Amino acid sequence: MCIAAFLWQGHPLYPLLLLHNRDEYHSRPTRPVEWWGGSEEMNVLGGRDDMAGGTWLACSRGGKVAFLTNVLELHPDPDAKTRGELPVLFLQSCKSPREFAEGVAKEAHLYNGFNLILSDISSNTMVYISNRPEGDAVVVRDVSPGLHVLSNEKLDSPWPKALKLGMGFKEQLLNYGEGEVDLKEMAKKLMRDRVKADENRLPGICDVEWELGLSSIFVEVDTPLGRCGTRSTIALSVGRNGEVTFDETYLEDGTWKEKTISYWIQKLKLSNNKK
Image (tube, rainbow, N blue to C red; front, side, top):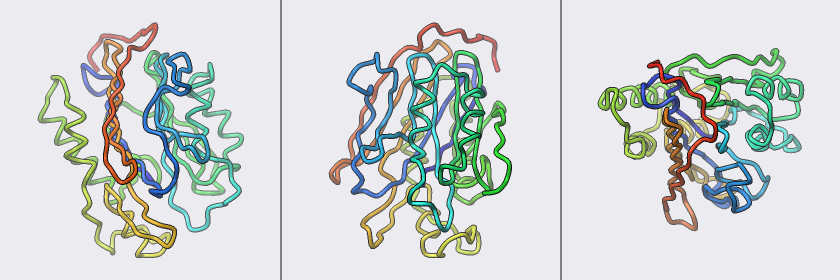
């Protein structure tokens, strides 16, 4: 189902600090982070869902970053369009985050529930769009500077795992102050938390046992379709100098592996003013 915590325009050295867990069936074919097509010229850096062809988090050499989470719902449509295509289409487009999101809003009914964050580091813009609750108007809104958590409800919804991750993220940031942040180390401390929420704090959307299994930051659930849970943890940092570091810890054939790719944003036009 995925969960992400991120600091947007809230640190003097980093316009964006992002931690993200991707939850999925362990048997689903997946590629770890790489430049799609094996070349930086493809302009998409991220993991890849080999079944549907999309991604859960990716970025581009031009300074765009996109990530999403699913919305927890009882009866998703098996024939809906794949949500994972949305970050890819944004990164491959020439549109601003808002322009792209406004286009998505017109076709949002074709997808199962999603939360989508679109950002352009070079222009200091970030927007959020969701197509749930179903029947509500789909609204694109700017993401305010500061710390945010995105789980499987609206942005900053007070689900137990979201509150816990947000608090932990804030505490870790305080330890670093205004200096360099070891985001990879933060991911190890925060994103492997297997403690489940109390049953009386669950949202009550689906079966209690299923919701309980999904209620920890790091998910591990056995289902009739096989093991499901956290398969990837990403620590993505974007420096004000334009350096991007994409670190992924991922599960492959039952073994946890690590991969890091760094690059520089092209034609960066960031303000050096302290936020």
